[in-house]
Amino acid sequence: MGGTEKLYQNQAAATPALVRTAIARGEINTPTAGLCPGYAQANLVILPQEWAFDFLLFALRNRQACPLLEVLDPGEPFLRVLAPGADVRDTLPRYRVWRQGRVVEEPTDIHQYWREDLVSFFLGCSFGFDEALAQAGLPVRHRDLGRNVPMYRTGLPAAPAGRLAGPLVVSMRPMPAHLVDKARKVSERYGESHGGPVHAGDPAQIGVAELEGPHYGESVPVEEGEVPVFWACGVTPQAALEQSGVEFAITHAPGHMFISDLRADELNGKTLI
Amino acid sequence: MGGTEKLYQNQAAATPALVRTAIARGEINTPTAGLCPGYAQANLVILPQEWAFDFLLFALRNRQACPLLEVLDPGEPFLRVLAPGADVRDTLPRYRVWRQGRVVEEPTDIHQYWREDLVSFFLGCSFGFDEALAQAGLPVRHRDLGRNVPMYRTGLPAAPAGRLAGPLVVSMRPMPAHLVDKARKVSERYGESHGGPVHAGDPAQIGVAELEGPHYGESVPVEEGEVPVFWACGVTPQAALEQSGVEFAITHAPGHMFISDLRADELNGKTLI
Image 1 (tube, helix red, strand yellow):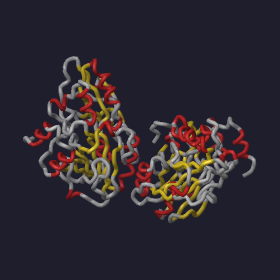
Image 2 (tube, chains in turn blue, purple):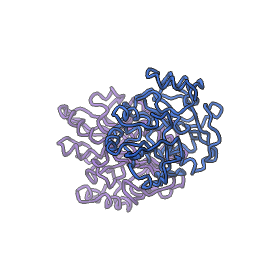
Image 3 (tube, one colour):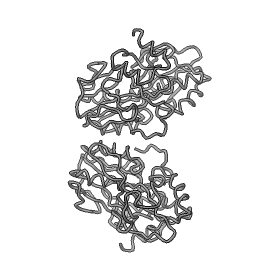
Image 4 (cartoon, chains in turn orange, blue):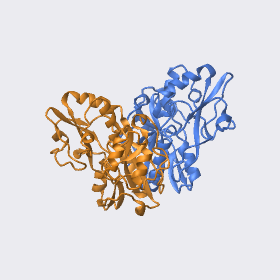
């Protein structure tokens, strides 16, 4: 958490390629909210091929939480579409290594874990529309505070697929009550970044007991007159990995995303996979 | 080719459920073009789970040829969405059983081949827009002649995925030259039924040497002043199965489709999987 990432946050001119290089060198290992504003960021799930069908079906059945942006062939570490030539093994600031459904390590690169049967899935991220929210005059509290976005497991089930099942996970942004509808309209234009919110208002209605102490990320305050607004989140697969007890997996650490070369507003309707 | 299927072709009132029941009883074993006009029909690919990821990725990378309508969990023979409760094992008029990439049998049901590791994929079919073409005053030659549609392997490669690779397969409908654009516009509205054509005009430009003797289905005449128009076809996976030499698979026999309970014009933009 030194000054390097601040440098990148303040340099609007820093390209995704430059930031990914700094990440690969170990110079940035923080959450990526606010980096490269306007560029699409992606959640990462890496699974052995033996689990890849279950996961691809899980993603297709949960499109709002898991908008598929790119899928790599088994054993292939280099992206083709989101950032041609980028290496999935060191271009995210922090990863999670899972064994038997538990996080056993959070390394900053995964070269030592790589196997020829691993399949990498990239899913859209709500950080993609944060810049559009800000441009529309809406608050983006976590970004303003330099924090990771708060994320919650809900009481809503994701659609199961094969051995994968679990709750829907959501991210939360507080909005002034009179701007909730505007936030909805702005985010709905970003279908590949989870689109419009799944809920606005009482967290209990989606099975979130309290907003303090989110399950992932960091807490942000909901001010007087504000309403918590919840968007489907690409951490949903991690809850399913945990519940499934999958023997081995690698994901991004929540909030520590892959930063793509494509702008979030270019993604819609594109066939990227 | 007795009188029974004619009965159904002539009875506009015959519902998909009624026709599927007649198919399951063995009373219809012909191509399904013209049956239940306006209802979405589907191509079928059944693969062992060990090949299911490769195929799902192949379909996603070749959306125009392989628009995914429904995917069943491993071992599950009953549909949930296209026709809830229908049994994939006997509701198509004719199947193909593949071993080592070769068709070894064309049975009218597949109960005896069923295994707990089989995954069923349903893909959109251009028969879905034939009724719209007819309603727009466009010829649908194969239907008018009571034939199966002619299908051709092209020289265009499908996007490979894992162990699956092969040529794009297309269906062909002759259109009067001045109506080609209208045919394009009508079919473009049916994105889940392959959408607009991939080519109109000289077959050689897409690597089809001659129109006589199609690779699948039956020949239809192209009259004076008509242009052959080619649409991406859900038989594309069968060409990839052949090239891959997959040890075991089941598909529909070309032209012998699954008839769904959904109208083709209801499919667009729906999340069915």
